[in-house]
Amino acid sequence: MPFPDFLSAFPALDVPFPDDVVSSQAIRSEAGLVVFFTFHRDMALPMHSHGAQWGTVVEGEITLTIGDETRVYRPGDHYSIPAGIQHGAQIKAGTRAIDVFQEADRYPLRG
Image (cartoon, rainbow, N blue to C red; front, top):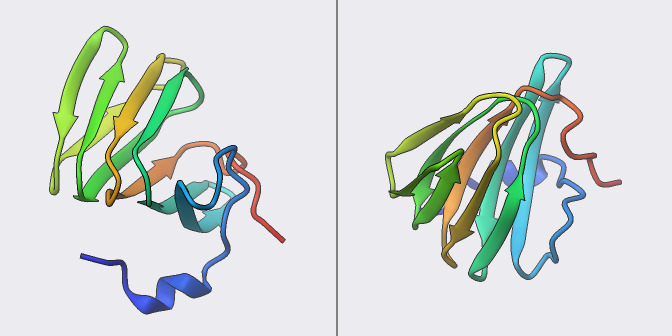
């Protein structure tokens, strides 16, 4: 299920991955960052940490390691990553996810 067309008017993020791998639209406030991700190709996200993050899979599949636990997330599943916990993922092409970051400046807006 694609995201609604009106989301394309939201600003994109400057993420450290090529546009042909992942695209994004975002809403930012002083309290946090909401990102609508679309993964166009399979992607490996290396282990890393930052402020708290919550997300849900809209379409596709994410194999996510949070700390020492690895689990497969599919449409309708959600995840919560506490601040400072190492995590990484294998994300399949065609996946759409919504992620909410505690850090409003987690990624800069493009433009």
